Length: 326
Image (cartoon, rainbow, N blue to C red; front, side, top):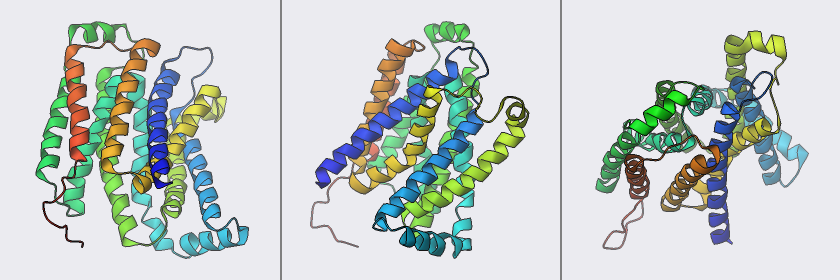
């Protein structure tokens, strides 16, 4: 049963990651009449869906008892205001990150985005060392060097890419690159900060995600008011929403929950495999379906290095003797 859950969670992760990148890219570049949906409002709606999903999971853990659910939410959230407030910092950073991903995919093709975004492995590792005192092994440090080299190759300009970028009217590749790099740093810091909080308390990951979603909704609404308040007042909160937009929102809401399931049922090696498969699928579909990506030999070299680094970072060599349990 556990093996089935392991591969099921990994399959869902590959599907969710690949589908989110491709649908988000397609939704931001699709030319259609009327106003385009606002990414700031999509982030808020995704946070609301995440809260609803986590409440359902807490309800399921409470043996489907509404009374128990109310007691758990009251005891773990309302009666622990300081514990809840701790989630404000990573929540604000995650909200910024989610908005940056829309900016990145409005300006970068799906394949380049997918590979470059793996730099979050580097930032997460560095924050883990500095904030949690983790020690990285030789294989992990080597993988980080290979990762940086791979991303550098992917971003290496070529004549075909320069010609293709001139034809694009959806934005600047530089803006997209800065957005994805900032998202990598925010993802690394927020992820390690969230891990630190989870290790310090005994609250369930679903309760913590409800708290994250609550603050994320507040920060997201503030962003809507500051950046898109005039457009919302003119055309409405759900302007430009269509079936594709709702798919993007749901996929984004499921992201954190799927990763939580993978962490619970799978390991780093299989997670790396899922990430690598997602990169390959995004590259192929971006080329054949979206037709916004011109592959080069340098890109493929960089992508192979990034995939290899992903596997190597999760590699955990078995000790020669009997392992000593902590």
